[in-house]
Length: 129
Image (cartoon, rainbow, N blue to C red; front, top):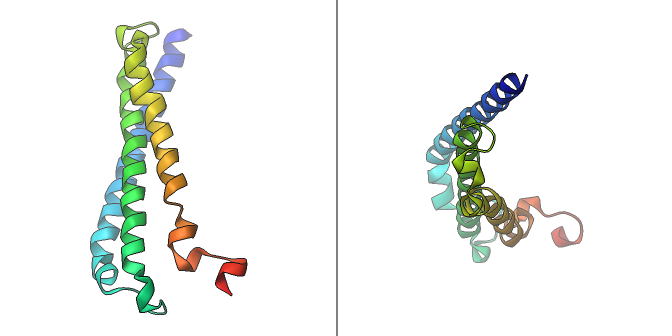
C-alpha cells in the first residue's frame, strides 16, 4: 500500500509539472503574439499613465512567480521519487530553499506587484471614478 501511495503522489506531481509546463509554453506564445500591443500601448488609457510599462511590470512579476512555483514542483518530483526518508528529503536546507522559500517569494511578488494596483482595467469602485 505504501508503494501504491508513493506512486500516486509521484504521478500527481509529474502531472502537475507537465501541465504547468504546457501552461508556460501557452503563456509564452500569447506573450509573443501580443508583444506588438504591449509596445504600442492600449487604447482608452491616458498617455501620461504609461499603461504599457505597468503591463510589462505585471508580466515580469507573473513570470517570476510562475518560475518559482515551477521550481518547487520540479524539486518535489525527485524528493518523492527517492522514497520516504531519502537523502534529499532529509536535507533541511534544500527543503527550506526549494520548497518553502519558492512559495514565499511567489506570494511576495504578487503582494508587491498586485495586478489591481498596476492595471487600470482591473480597478473597481471608487478608483474608477
